[in-house]
Every structure is written in C-alpha cells, then in structure tokens.
Length: 257
Ligand code: NAD
View (tube, rainbow, N blue to C red):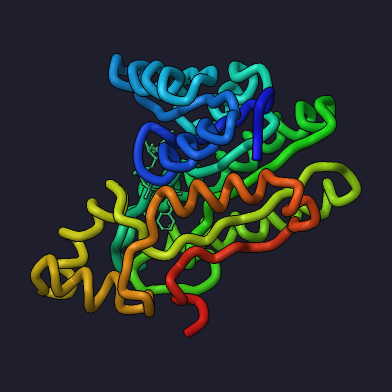
C-alpha cells in the first residue's frame, strides 16, 4: 500500500519501537516526523539517512513530552499530521510503597498525558485533511498487570481507555484510533529493565530473560520492531478503516493465557 502524501508523526522515535514504526511508515511512502527530547547531530542524521533510504521527507523535531505544551508544540511544528503514533514511553520498576513520586509523575506524563495533548492538536488537522489514523503504543501491560510496574501499568491501561474514547469521538469520520499492545520487544527500554529484574529476582541475564521477562510470552520469542511497524502500516490501510477503538496484541500469545 502507499502512504504517499501522508505525514506521520511518531513520538519517541529516535530508537526502539518508534524508530521501527517510522521506518515501516517511510517504506510505505509516508513523510515522517521523528521525535525525542534530545536534539543531537545523531538525531538529525537519523532523519537525513531515513529520507535518503526511502525517498520521503523526514524531519527530526525535538520536544520533551513530559511537558504538555511541548507535546502540543510538536504537532504544531510538524505542520501536518495524518498519522499520529503515540509511542514515547519510559519505565521504572519498584514496589509501590517504594515507588518514587517523581517517577510516577514522569511515567504518567510521558506514557499517557502526552498522547492526550498530541491527539488534541492532531485531530483538527486530520479533520481538515479528511482522513486520519491515531495509533497508540500501549502494551500487554495495557491489558494485564505485573508486580512492581504500577505507574507503567496504570498509564498503559489509561492509554487503552483513551484510544476507545477518541475512537468514539471520531466514529463517524474517516479517522480511526486504536492501541497496539506489544509483548516483549528487545529494545533499549527492555534492555534497561534487565539489571533491575536481575537484582529483584537474583538471577543471571539469560535466566531472567527466559524465566521472568518471556515467562508470560508463550512463543518464547521477543516481538520485533519490524512486526510492530507492519501492524501500524496495516492500521493505516483501507482494510483497517472499520477497525477502531480496539487493541491489537503483538505478544506471542501473552494475553491468551
Ligand atoms: P525506547 O527506550 O527504545 O524508546 C522510547 C522512546 O521514547 C525513545 O525514542 C526515547 O527517546 C523517547 N522518550 C523518552 N522520554 C521522552 C520524552 N520525555 N520526550 C520525548 N521522547 C521521549 O523503548 P521502546 O521499547 O522502543 O518503547 C517504545 C514504546 O513501546 C513505549 O511506549 C513502551 O512502553 C512500549 N512498549 C515497549 C515494549 C518492549 O518490549 N520494548 C513492550 C510493550 C510496549
């Protein structure tokens, strides 16, 4: 399928799943706006390389999505937003009675509130263009819980609810809103959890990956960023025009358990 002439804004897309989704959307012909909170030469080089590789326009726009005004500013600076992928996310693992308040606030702001702000600005642009897709990257933890991840799980359940509400508010328009719920994907976010999990469970790296991290993923394989990108491209297709207000799990069977 071709997404020529569409502009996709992907939050948190200088690494991991966001970058994988951006690459698949660019491959499908979309112009892309990359984002993170940094503003380095590497960030802008990433955009230039992607533009050259796929023959589309790619810009990098820095915005710290822990700040609601900055999240709104990202979409304003993008200038157009036919496809909005709310992907930026952080994690912190601690028992609830030891969970630092600043970590709670940052996770809710980046993983949940930023999607409220970007969607609020993007929807009028989609309405003016007569077409739109909002794709929220939730998690298997948007549908199920695990201990020690209270803020993350609250935010991910929240973004599933936000997706349903946006879908109902746009149901009679050529705009859809859905949440993709990945299981474990080996990215920097997951990589950064491994030391904490090793300490919490007193296990070596391989054992913690197999027994703890992929314990609930029946396939025993990490999902890939390319698979998540492909799912996002599918949600942008005409075949998915009546898919709205729901979740698509890419989790190796996790939520079937
Ligand atoms: P990652 O750390 O590789 O990517 C996170 C991205 O968010 C990065 O680009 C980072 O720079 C950006 N980001 C962080 N704080 C930001 C801020 N304040 N402002 C702007 N950007 C910010 O992690 P990932 O695994 O690719 O995660 C991407 C999304 O997928 C997250 O929402 C995460 O919760 C979700 N997810 C990941 C997995 C997994 O197994 N990796 C599973 C389910 C859901």
